[in-house]
Length: 403
Image (cartoon, rainbow, N blue to C red; front, side, top):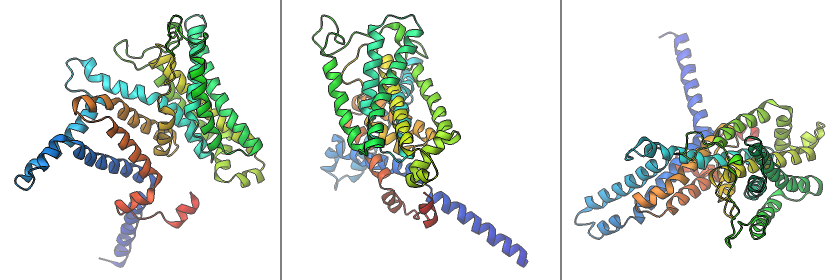
């Protein structure tokens, strides 16, 4: 082999090693391995919670194979039940029964997509907005009131109700934005307080004549008028509605906003270095207000997907569920990017949809799903821990500085 060939081969090997190191150092790999680690630890918890494994452990030294078989059966049973409950129920008698789990996952993912996109914008702008829960509640409350109290033609009624939801969420995002920009109030504290305010406000509203269902003592509003409900995409057999398609459209809109627009550049510049952005002539307070308002509007959209879609039977105090808090994990898991947020939301939507199947078919507590979600948050929040567990190299200093 000539010297030139030897040199070329050495350069090629060096390039291969460089590519492999870039993959090993990438944040995307850390996210994927965080999910894997969470599933593995979840499997261990499934084994510990299995009565069959506990029984087999009683005679482990006489027949150890029984314990391992019971553990394997518990793990496969749990994750098979989660698959059947969130993706495809191959035991279903009809196509509708088989396909419904996937549509339920997408239905559960819809508010997470909206809220996660809004939180992701804030994270990229250097604002830790954790007020999505309150913004969803306000969006659902105002949009729901328009949905059951107003009498408008079909089509127009839905549009007006959606706008009301978006404005309700935007208002609840504008408040911490203006306080942050003008008074220096910390957005974390303000948004936490506003979450409590929104939760108590909807509880109070449902006790008034304007919101409470006539002739009922339960804290529930009248059902949403059919003219204000999101149309079902796949017919009456499934709950998936038009809001899912709007959520995907919103993801494209957020991508364009953050990557192609002047406002998005300003948001990212403020998040990277607010002082440098101010020196460059950017209006930092206006950017802060804009980011928080847009984030609130998207969370209000999430509220509309709940009250005008899946929860159209009537407004309740639990209309937001835990979507606002789960959206924080979704945004972190998706690295605050639209595509990553959509994929993370679908993953968490699948977790939520699989809970009943895990409880009924596998006989395990639904809390296992919550534990897996919490573990994902833990590993996402501690990348060095994931790198230590999987023996990944630490990012180069240049990448850390650039980030």
